[in-house]
Image (cartoon, rainbow, N blue to C red; front, side, top):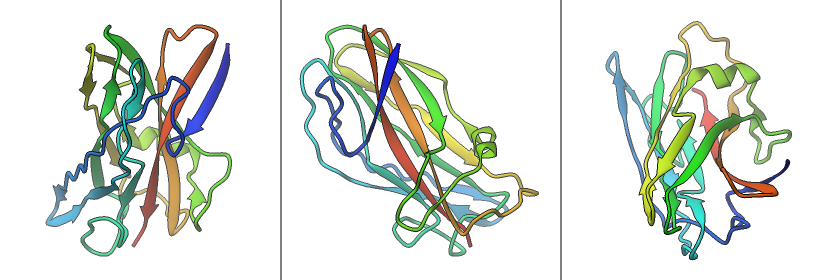
Length: 178
């Protein structure tokens, strides 16, 4: 089965996108807080489509909310990923962590070990004409070796049962270390 991965900045092949949602979920850990802020990208949902909300999640940077000027080993950051189903029937999507093959904006590509630092549901069932809000949690171990000042990975949503092609859309996570 062929697979087409589209960036969040493009409309899904099924014609869908999501309305903006600004999720901020601070996590307190030993008197220190690391949180995320999502940059809103207003878009319109199309009929018979699946889309995700918010284009980019900023962790520990001046573009998001931060304490202590950045993310650090031992910190936790959470984000709710709104996934919209604009079909009149229930849909199932698969969530995956993807390490991009190249990066931009001065961010390094995260090492594969980052996949082990994320907690999220692997599949999500979305009722007809509604949305699901799975929680994505990034837990960098306290003993993790710092590999870059700024790095990125992606959370990818793949709609299942699409026939010949699978269409996916990704949410970019940009992490700035202190």
